Amino acid sequence: MFRSTLVFSGHANPPLAQKIASYLQMPLGRVRLSRFSDGEVFAEIQENVRGADVYIIQSTCAPVNDHLMELLVMTDALKRASAGSITAVIPYYGYARQDRKAAPRTPITAKLVADLLSTSGINRVVSMDLHAGQIQGFFNVPFDHLYAMPVFLDHLRQRFAGEMPVFVSPDAGGVERTRAYAKRMQADLAIIDKRRPKANVTEVMHIIGDVEGRDCILLDDIIDTAGTLTNAAQALKDHGARTIYAAATHPVLSGPAIERIVASPLADVIVTDTIPLSAAAEESGKFTVLSGARLLGEAIRRIHHSDSVSSLFV
Image (tube, rainbow, N blue to C red; front, side, top):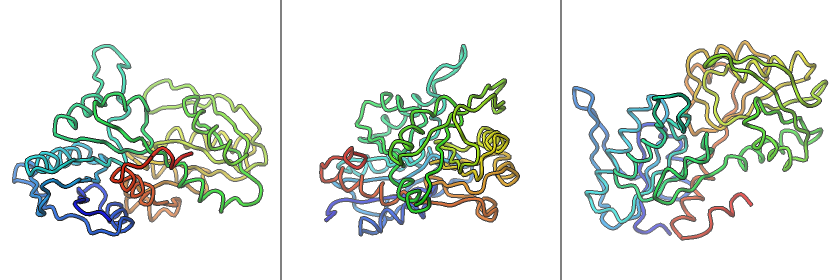
């Protein structure tokens, strides 16, 4: 089925890459990634890729710069080996939060990364749940933006087969995403109004919607330091919510995130495997991991056969 197609993986998330390759019923391509003594990245493609359609699976998660450089160096190696096309499958797009000038004399690093990827020789990009959808416009190559919603909805429909929970947006910026889930699940919607006095510090003001005595699911795209999420969970608890869950696509979980989640009223945090969980997160017992491999693999299959990708979400 996938003649002259190869899938390679960087070091960011080998288990996800292996699951995608299994879905496509093909082995992962052989590549040797190593470091020089000073830390420089070196890549050697150990397959014949001349004229092949190549897909590189690499999340730019922590350590972000190392994984980004791996992706760029692998792309350059493939381009110089005369690959027919190179598609970067980036389940988690790092630097996505730097998508605009938030203050004078600051960079738009999401655009810089897009330029680096394009210059390296990438012909197409596939990513999932971008923090800011307009990042697609930073690229002058085709960009397929996937949504983890089908993965979450399949799980939530089975888990909450009886009374539907209330879907809660932890801030005003996530209302559109939360409304989409609530509409498809025929469930209620609530919004948390917050104020952010300074970076990584949030103060919950009040809740719009009825959560008293209800199960609630907080929805977000990224869990970084978990300050927003845990403050929102505590606010829901203070307003009489029965059981509080969270669902987020990308478990960045930096700094005190795990400690905050463990100490919070959250009963379960549902995430995808776009970023591998740390050992501490797995041991906490607070996380349920869903795999996006089937969704990403199906997107690759459709791209390869020039079929519709958007129909995955209709």
